[in-house]
Image: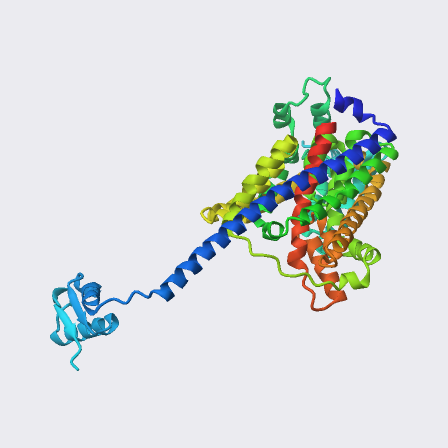
Amino acid sequence: MLASSLDAIGILDAGIVALLGYVVVFFGLILLMGVITIMGKAFVAAEQKAAQKAAAAKEAMAANPIVPTFAELERSIKAPGSAGQLKLHDVEPKTAAMLMAIVANQMGKPLNELRFISIKEVK
Amino acid sequence: MINIGEILLNLWNKSGFAALSSGFTTGGWQNLLMIVIACVLLYFGIVKKFEPLLLVGIAFGCLLSNLPMGGLYHQELWTAFMDEASPFYHSYGEIMRHGGLLDIFYIGVKTSLYPCLIFMGVGAMTDFGPLLSNPKSLLLGAAAQLGVFVAFFGAICMGFTGSEAASIGIIGGADGPTAIFLTSKLAPHLLGAIAVAAYSYMALIPLIQPPIMNLLTSPEDRKIKMVQTRNVSKSEKIIFPIVVVVFVALLLPDTAPLIGCLMLGNLLKETGVTDRLSDTVQNALMNIVTILLSTAVGSTMVGSTFLTMNTLKIVVLGVVAFGISTAGGLLGGNVMCKLTGGKVNPLIGSAGVSAVPMAARVSNTQGQKANPSNFLLMHAMGPNVAGVIGSAIAAGFLLSVFG
């Protein structure tokens, strides 16, 4: 058996085992280095690709900005506090929320019992 | 009427004091000397703060097992356990039936449970990011295993058997759990001496390494500032332990328990979904196992087996192994410095010995002495954690040859 025959090892054999062991450690770690390097390159490439995609999308947005029409805005901006039914005309959602809270307070009724149809800025 | 004198005499005869005094001609002095050594180790651990978390436990285990009549540890049970001709060869049942508390603790060392669990904790506390951002540092981790094989060769020249020499050589890996793992398998009778030597020298790294670093590097090279390495993504850190465990365990299956636990601990840390487990492994489990491991290893330091010339030889070979491993890493660092046109500070090579993070801190300190604006810590962590993998591979090789 290898182990039992090597237990009473001679100096020359010990030198060979020592050298072989050192080489094996280097071999193992060099292979691991190769694997990690490849893995790292793959990750860096993937990250670069994702970054390039994001940059291209940003550039495209800058070149062709999508400006919504007033009607689109009117359709899209709905205050969540009124179950999506409240229409805001030239009013920020934050301002609308504040107005709704003031109205509820003045009327002495809970906000969830009131129904707001629309809020429009009087110019 | 009760004979009080007889009772007191019986009490005296059953006491450890009587055993110590009557056994002076048959080895009782060895126990006394070991108790003194235990107290010296306690002094180093508590007052000098040399690896106190381990040295205090080791010293106390040594103290307990050398107190006569305590019955905490039975060397003869473990001798029978290792003797192929004995009916109790590899019989844990016999140990459980007749063993003391420290014998039960020692089962965890014998089965390699404790070193593997410690490695799991080390993995959970280690950030492999610096290694991933600079994979070349693996070469420094390999170069710094030189001391393992030189000390192995030296031990053979000094008359040790192959298994004993392999266990002594691994001290050069500067990795306590790996040294205990290998020694408990190849040369358990040397475990106490090897563990004490390994942990003592690891504590003395700030004293052992700097003179060698100054000797093997030029003042100009020590001033080299290294550039910031790339950021490593979370996905990369999660995949790394899986890749390493598959790769290394396939290359050297004997390292699978150590590398497997190291990488499991690291995966628990990196996933981000097992924070509770990671926290337990890093703290509670690590602390419990450290107590059991250190006490069990200390208990093997029984006078009759520890007070031999071999212990003295191990102490000498251990420091040689540490020194040569440091030199190997520095030579690797010098080569890398030249090949990269002075982009690598050779001081990070000495961190290739795996004492994490002590060796990396020493590299950083020496670098700052040469150039106060030099911050080498993160660069040195790469070779440092590579050294952990390197010493495990070295242990796997020695185990496959002599195991």
